[in-house]
Image (cartoon, rainbow, N blue to C red):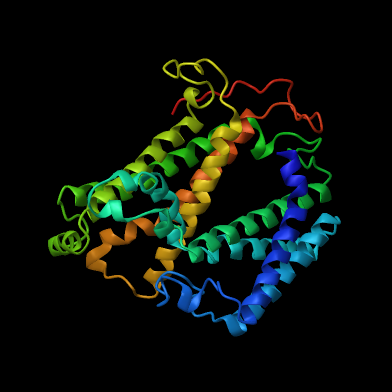
Length: 356
């Protein structure tokens, strides 16, 4: 992790240079421009950038990427101040504005579509390429660039306050980052991160059973007629979300720190913290992206109030994502021991097993 954070600025600079080249190429007529007419969603219902065209859009992309590159280089050289102020909005734009809800759908449907070729019916006609067309894959790459820039900003901030680049700790321990404090606010974060997705899941399970929760009965009938199996697919997503809610409990339960007995070959062993932190953080970012798409569309008047079940639960996904990210952070703060890089922290992590 130390190496990743310390090298994030270099990686962000490389990413930025690559997109600057792509922007110029697209502006000069190269194929592959991922927005506008080449996007499977050209009417702009999902993407805020649907109106871009290669010219002048490509030039704007190149200019934005060059700004990211200059900011990354400045952060690597230890220059704080303005580069830090600029880095966070750039990273937020790449992670929260460029992607839309299709990125979450691609991630959620990938396990199913990986075996779709063996299924009968309409699902047998759908493959991974349908979930990951180039415009959606480009969103993933943009989010990666934003994550690298954010990591570079974190490293620069830690250097500015004389904190360890690896763990962020200074000689002044305690506060909200201490194990005891993290355990308290982490429980609240987990409770929210478990409750919000279950609201969404309840509506989709109801639809799969033919119960029109938050929608009209004709909506369910016509949806099934137009796309057979669509409500079963919704139930699949609901189950995916509910499973994530159950796994979130592990951030405050003993089985999230020590593998349970039924896991043959692993039982009794310590759960590596990153095994929980990395997936939780990725899911948090993805659901925030998707939720913001629904909020943007709701504010634009794209939905009807009498059909609230089709969109209102999704508008709470940013709350879910923020709570999940906070829960993952609390879990990491509780479980970290002595830093191998700076030597700060307890010799052994304090007892931190919690029961909800």
